[in-house]
Image (tube, rainbow over all chains, first blue to last red):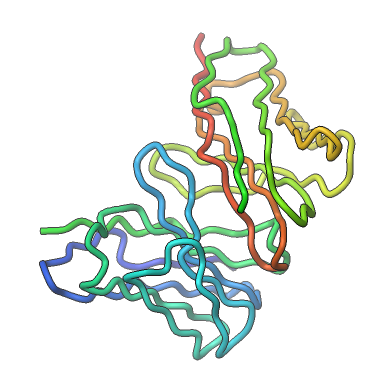
Length: 111
Length: 110
């Protein structure tokens, strides 16, 4: 089955720690995205990538980093510089940006 | 920048019709998408309007008026499973980027 897989489903970060969220897709989509969703809020764009080895900052990129070494994979690192990382993180991919396919998400909490 | 406005909550009766509005302010507008998200779940794509008018997909329809910077999602024959949050999203400016609204939480009651 084609789709997007995010792991882990739940993640806990200690003070000063970097953590990496995984996102893998087998839909053969060129574009991939990372969003952050806070309770009762919409989706805010962190980073997006239109093609392998290229990515752009979204609206809230500070404290986050990404890489796009393979078409299938777009991992997100939440660095210690992100002071309020507790949120629901969603990864998506698309052929065209108006129709994005989302993974099941990762819930990140701070210990 | 971009801004989108949607009602925060809507309640409707099972079997009825409900309309969720979305107004936007943006430069370089291309089109308006709608997504559904159940609590704790992933958003799923419902529809996209790139041109003015009505797009129909089963029980769901979406409308766009570019001159009014306005669109809506219409849900007919409401079912309990339609209880979810609905987000509008504008495609504008940079080709591969969309901006999401804050969402409308729809509660369907018996």
